[in-house]
Image (tube, rainbow, N blue to C red):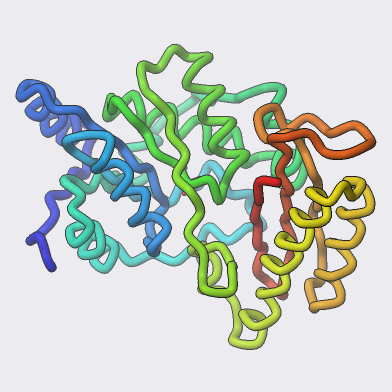
Length: 286
Ligand code: PAF
């Protein structure tokens, strides 16, 4: 089913005018920030937004501030027309697709940093620039739109915790909600970056969900975190992953390291690893 062309706002003023109209009619608003290259995982977040609010706004902005110079900003997949058609089919009400000048005008000088805690380990070590860029752009998007609810995928679980902390610390009047990860039949988490995988790498990538499944089962059976982390590393290297950024079992609320002994409820397994030129991340609740 096609719901017809999707209205697109390019400026903050246009976005605010549409949202003000909804608010005047007493409607609740959900925002789903994205970087485009939309897949079924993103569309499940739109569906969640439609359950939680009367109106949904998706944003598409490939945010230069969250990519380091050596990363894939230029190569990141872009296709607004295709994305807009998917959003219309999913029943989204508005696309906010600002240009770089609208988001970062000349003289832009402010950054938002979640300085300690959930931003420090894992991605905070591997990609030190990342959460500053994410927190800055998401703070801007939420201030620009003023939604009641903002929805982010649990695939980027640490990002979700960082955004929740940021919204709480800055008193943004928004409920930050996580949407469950959408997976392929073999368990590989959907990601826009999966498009970089060659056919052979895609086959090898199945080792990642297999290792996660093993880790969860072993931990539930009383396995020691350090042993399980070692076994996951070994199985990924054995399957052809060329570099492991991290395999760590941490508390799912605080991201604190766990002590020795059986893992406590709420633990989560976090992995980031490279298959050829593609960096895959995933996390599973124990
Ligand atoms: O998860 C993403 O796609 C991005 O990090 C986000 C939250 C849209 C910020 O640019």
